[in-house]
Image (cartoon, rainbow, N blue to C red; front, side):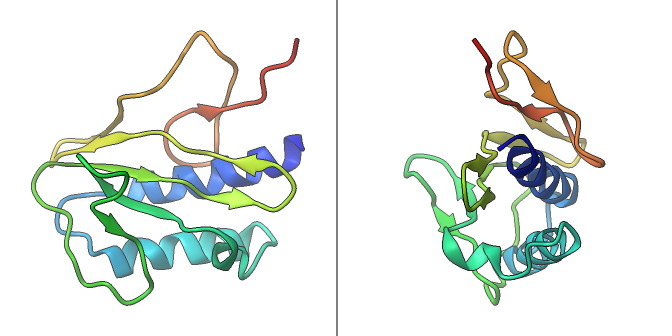
Length: 126
Protein backbone atom coordinates (compact mmCIF):
# COMPACT_ATOMS: atom_id res chain seq x y z
CA UNK A 1 0.00 0.00 0.00
CA UNK A 2 2.87 2.41 0.76
CA UNK A 3 4.19 1.92 -2.77
CA UNK A 4 0.76 2.60 -4.27
CA UNK A 5 0.32 5.77 -2.19
CA UNK A 6 3.83 6.91 -3.19
CA UNK A 7 2.99 6.27 -6.85
CA UNK A 8 -0.24 8.28 -6.61
CA UNK A 9 1.69 11.04 -4.83
CA UNK A 10 4.29 11.11 -7.62
CA UNK A 11 1.58 11.42 -10.27
CA UNK A 12 -0.14 14.12 -8.22
CA UNK A 13 3.13 16.01 -7.73
CA UNK A 14 3.83 15.93 -11.45
CA UNK A 15 0.45 17.36 -12.42
CA UNK A 16 0.50 19.95 -9.64
CA UNK A 17 3.93 21.09 -10.84
CA UNK A 18 2.58 21.48 -14.37
CA UNK A 19 -0.61 23.30 -13.33
CA UNK A 20 -0.14 26.89 -14.44
CA UNK A 21 -2.44 29.51 -15.98
CA UNK A 22 -2.77 28.85 -19.70
CA UNK A 23 -2.01 25.12 -19.47
CA UNK A 24 -4.83 23.19 -21.10
CA UNK A 25 -6.63 20.30 -19.50
CA UNK A 26 -5.38 18.12 -22.38
CA UNK A 27 -1.76 19.11 -21.65
CA UNK A 28 -2.21 18.39 -17.95
CA UNK A 29 -3.92 15.11 -18.71
CA UNK A 30 -0.87 14.13 -20.78
CA UNK A 31 1.28 14.87 -17.71
CA UNK A 32 -0.91 12.51 -15.68
CA UNK A 33 -0.80 9.83 -18.36
CA UNK A 34 3.00 9.98 -18.67
CA UNK A 35 3.51 10.04 -14.90
CA UNK A 36 1.45 6.86 -14.52
CA UNK A 37 3.43 5.19 -17.31
CA UNK A 38 6.76 6.31 -15.85
CA UNK A 39 5.73 4.79 -12.51
CA UNK A 40 4.93 1.46 -14.16
CA UNK A 41 1.13 1.88 -14.26
CA UNK A 42 0.27 2.71 -17.88
CA UNK A 43 -3.47 3.01 -18.40
CA UNK A 44 -4.21 3.29 -14.67
CA UNK A 45 -5.80 6.68 -15.36
CA UNK A 46 -8.64 4.85 -17.11
CA UNK A 47 -9.88 3.35 -13.81
CA UNK A 48 -10.91 6.56 -12.03
CA UNK A 49 -11.53 10.18 -13.02
CA UNK A 50 -8.41 12.27 -12.58
CA UNK A 51 -9.92 15.46 -11.22
CA UNK A 52 -9.67 18.87 -12.82
CA UNK A 53 -10.77 22.44 -12.24
CA UNK A 54 -12.84 22.71 -9.08
CA UNK A 55 -14.95 25.38 -7.45
CA UNK A 56 -18.58 25.29 -6.43
CA UNK A 57 -19.14 21.86 -7.95
CA UNK A 58 -17.00 18.85 -7.12
CA UNK A 59 -15.31 19.47 -10.47
CA UNK A 60 -16.21 22.35 -12.75
CA UNK A 61 -14.22 20.71 -15.55
CA UNK A 62 -13.30 17.02 -15.40
CA UNK A 63 -9.96 16.27 -17.00
CA UNK A 64 -10.17 14.32 -20.24
CA UNK A 65 -7.47 13.64 -22.81
CA UNK A 66 -8.66 16.10 -25.46
CA UNK A 67 -10.19 19.00 -23.46
CA UNK A 68 -8.64 22.28 -24.65
CA UNK A 69 -9.98 24.28 -21.68
CA UNK A 70 -7.11 26.46 -20.45
CA UNK A 71 -6.56 27.15 -16.78
CA UNK A 72 -7.49 30.79 -16.12
CA UNK A 73 -5.22 33.33 -14.41
CA UNK A 74 -6.43 32.08 -11.03
CA UNK A 75 -8.37 28.93 -10.29
CA UNK A 76 -8.60 25.94 -8.00
CA UNK A 77 -7.71 22.46 -9.18
CA UNK A 78 -8.21 19.15 -7.47
CA UNK A 79 -6.34 16.33 -9.14
CA UNK A 80 -6.94 12.89 -7.71
CA UNK A 81 -4.69 10.23 -9.15
CA UNK A 82 -5.27 6.76 -7.81
CA UNK A 83 -3.61 3.37 -8.08
CA UNK A 84 -5.61 0.18 -7.83
CA UNK A 85 -5.28 -1.40 -4.43
CA UNK A 86 -5.46 1.63 -2.17
CA UNK A 87 -3.20 4.39 -3.47
CA UNK A 88 -4.73 7.84 -3.85
CA UNK A 89 -3.56 11.42 -3.58
CA UNK A 90 -5.92 14.38 -3.59
CA UNK A 91 -6.01 17.95 -2.34
CA UNK A 92 -7.26 21.27 -3.62
CA UNK A 93 -4.65 23.68 -4.93
CA UNK A 94 -4.85 27.33 -5.89
CA UNK A 95 -3.22 28.00 -9.26
CA UNK A 96 -1.99 31.52 -10.00
CA UNK A 97 0.71 32.94 -12.22
CA UNK A 98 3.05 32.97 -9.23
CA UNK A 99 2.68 29.43 -7.96
CA UNK A 100 0.49 26.44 -7.28
CA UNK A 101 -0.34 26.30 -3.58
CA UNK A 102 -2.01 23.32 -1.92
CA UNK A 103 -4.68 24.91 0.27
CA UNK A 104 -6.11 21.79 1.91
CA UNK A 105 -2.79 20.42 3.16
CA UNK A 106 -2.76 18.98 6.68
CA UNK A 107 0.89 19.28 7.77
CA UNK A 108 0.18 17.62 11.14
CA UNK A 109 -0.38 14.35 9.28
CA UNK A 110 2.32 12.27 7.58
CA UNK A 111 3.43 13.31 4.11
CA UNK A 112 5.62 11.94 1.34
CA UNK A 113 7.79 14.10 -0.88
CA UNK A 114 7.32 13.09 -4.52
CA UNK A 115 10.13 13.66 -7.04
CA UNK A 116 8.38 16.87 -8.17
CA UNK A 117 5.75 19.06 -6.60
CA UNK A 118 4.70 19.73 -3.04
CA UNK A 119 4.53 17.17 -0.23
CA UNK A 120 1.56 14.84 -0.61
CA UNK A 121 -0.49 12.94 2.01
CA UNK A 122 0.95 9.69 3.30
CA UNK A 123 -0.63 6.85 5.22
CA UNK A 124 -1.56 7.57 8.81
CA UNK A 125 -0.32 4.69 10.93
CA UNK A 126 -1.72 4.19 14.43
